[in-house]
Image 1 (spheres, helix red, strand yellow):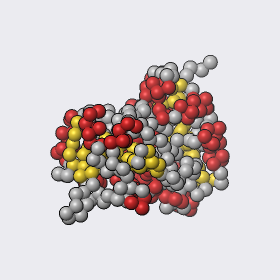
Image 2 (image 1 turned 30 degrees about the horizontal axis):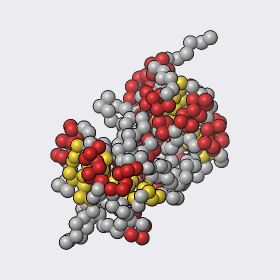
Image 3 (image 1 turned 120 degrees about the horizontal axis):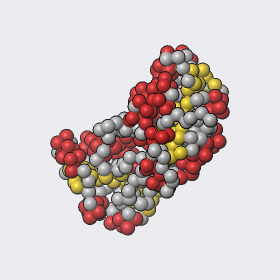
Image 4 (image 1 turned 90 degrees about the vertical axis):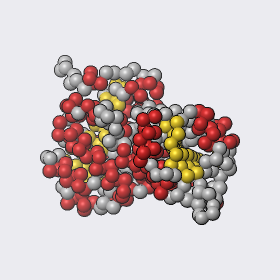
Length: 376
């Protein structure tokens, strides 16, 4: 199979979808790899690294898109890339379709096969290709939130860890999954007072066992969230519904109860966000203020630490990508049900429930989608 890796062109996206080690794994398996010139530089990988691994360096994204049978990316194709997608071409990347109807419509119209990192799901419910970026984003959420709490950044002037004689800042985390767990550990390590909320009692019991003493676990209800918001300095949205839009847990009216200069970092923004007033921002212009509360909505937070993020992501994606290349997408997804759940849109059909529900589209049975069409 011919694998193509274009340069990421979303604003301030510095990651790359394949490391030189990954390129070497493909070439050793008998596949051809095209890397757009300069695609890996921001992650610390110059073109000569890829050439040494057996990849071909091409001068333009058009060359990659037009020749490759499978495109590997980090972020969803943006509007300027939509015309480059073609019928039957496999796209393996993060999509978050439920947050963008125009993207969904564009991929459907192209006839491409969209396999989303974020919905590859193991039998135990784990999302192996979302986990590494969730770990990065959870830790970054506290780091970014702490920065914007500083007075020169417009914040309330609170040091999360406090000092002797001064109460530490309070961090409220909505969601006890991978993002929330990593955010809680980071905030606790800084010395903050931490509250983490979830609706899964079993998960809360687990978190109560493994978290340090300065982390309190709380059952999430609408009433409880409102009460916790009142004295929180930093609120982190960490709710995930697999492949679907995140629920709004913090409403516009709630902001009036929060302290002026407090900060919201909504990691769920690429799935619509769990804060009603959040909208996607970029690393160039990351924040805005609503009712005296700072909102941070960067949808590709891990892109800010590309060296760490690229290595973490490709460690997870490479085995699945090799499976797709070695067996073809239909056979690979039939043989590995976890990978099969990554098929969101294929050849003009929606195959993932969360996407169909988000936009009222017809849902096609995955087994039917994975069946090779009969020859005419």
